Structure formats: C-alpha cells, structure tokens
Image (cartoon, rainbow, N blue to C red):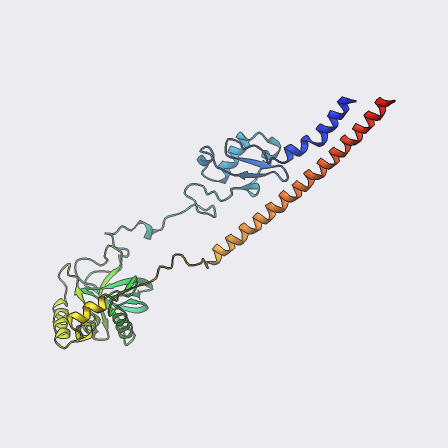
Length: 324
C-alpha cells in the first residue's frame, strides 16, 4: 500500500515540477519548446555564432541538441532567434551588400561625370544655409558647398546673421536659372560635397551675398577664378555697412554672446513606423508568453490539487483499514 501511495505521488506531483521548467539549454544556448517544437535561441554561444545563416544554424541544432524528435523536422519557420542576427546580416536576415557609394573614400570623386572647369545647368532641390544647398545635375542630386565664401551657421547652431544669410541664398536661388561652375584643383571636398561657383542667370551668388554683408570669411585653398571679385565685394560691404557690417564692434560682440544652439532632438520619442511596429510585435509576444505561462501554471495547480486529494483519500483509507 505504501508503494502505491508513493507511486501515486510521483505520478501527480513530479510532472508538475518538470513542467515548470522550459528545458535545459544545449551547447548553442537554446532549447526546444515542448508545446510546439519551436527552437528558442536564448543566449547564442560561441558555437552558435559560427553559423553564417539560418541553414547552418539548423544543422548545428540537429547535431548538438538531444531532442531528436523535434530536431529531425526542424525548419526555418520553427526557429526563434529572439533578436539575434547572423554576422554580416541585418535584422531581416538579409546579407548586407556594400554599394558603390559606400566604397568612396574622402579623396575620391563620387561621380566621374562632373569635371573641373565646366559649367552645368542645375535644378534647386533644397536650400540648406547661406553657403550650402542641394542641386540636381543630369538627374543626380549633389550636396554643394559654394566655393570661396563662408557664411554664419544656421543649422547645427544659430550664429548672428546665420538665418539672414540662409534666407538671402534661398531667395536668390529661386530668382532665375541656375548654373554650377567647377573650379580649383578638385571637384569634391573631403565630405564628398560638390564644390562650385553658383550662377543665377548672369549673376554670381557668391559675389551678391558678399555685397549684401552676409559673408564673414573666405576659405582660400587654391587659385579660383572669381576670388578677386569676392574680395572687392567684401570691401564694398564693409564700406557701405551692409548686413553684419552695419553694427559696431561692441554691438557685434553682444550679438555673438546671444548665439543660440539648436536643441538636441535625440531624446524625442521615436515616431518611425517600423520602430512602432517592432514595439507592438514585442508587446504581442510578451502577451502570448504571459498567457502561455498562466495556462501552464493553472494546469500545474490543478494537478497539485488532484494529487493532494488522492493522498488524503489514501491516508484515511489506510488508517481505517489498520483499525480493522
């Protein structure tokens, strides 16, 4: 009778203890979920990381996991990487392939079609600031740095007269037909920006914005065709007190002290739809796991109760028999 009691206890109680455990991890850092034979790669080991793709990982699972019944029919759909990505692959599992632009060094020209000493009809794509804009030439868009001039900043930070310079440039570029002219000893700078003189109809933008008093300095890294015209325009702007030169030195110092930095937006909430979708999927997965755990716990509780009732029944049955 005692043997029968212990057998009953083992039948009802021990399965509840094993059911509470999801399975020991194999040498790859994962295990099969008993309910549906889905392989869960919890913590990829160095062995798992030797797999370059899903097919190689499946072969490793079949070799190193002892659950042959699940491993034998394992497919890609039944492997949950839990966020792990294979080496040289992105989150979607696709191998990353470098594009020609990825291989351009800072000293190489991104497009051989653009030559030095040549004029190109261009179309305005976007105004950036007083000395930078984006133009389209023959269907290709180029971030373009205007040759020779340097205007106050209005992007990463707002400097005195930065907004005025940006507004002047944008308005000027929309006033006529645009032509870009390459010059100097190189077509692109180290940031792969096109370097050019900017003509709007028959007017040179660099010359006009300098006359307006919105150029604070020159960058002279070579011999340029129109640098004498720009230097003369700067002298004229200062003489006529144009733009930033309309104030005294003391007033300029006071304005510079009020330079405003653009707020950092890196901590703003993520509004990328793909990120939102990932968050929703994660929440759904967590909800499913919670429901699964709850159902397992409920099943465990029922078995424990039944086991205890059987034990109580057997206890009273044995006592009653012994009294007889």
